[in-house]
Length: 77
Image (cartoon, rainbow, N blue to C red; front, side, top):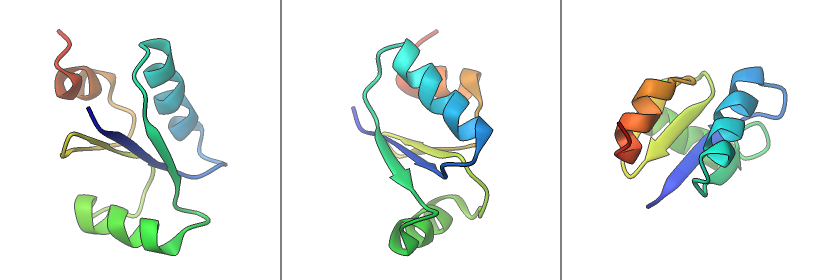
């Protein structure tokens, strides 16, 4: 399973998304788009959004911290 979280250090919803993934023991790659312009461009290409967080769960793009959508993409519930 490949999970990427596009985030910035100052985004409270990014921290909530990452804390949630940690709480359910899902490993993820944390990509700081505030420090990496190439990653920011990749995030916009995938999501069409400039806002964070954006999660890529096995190719399913989730914009914002949407617990139900994350669970669904992970195959839970």
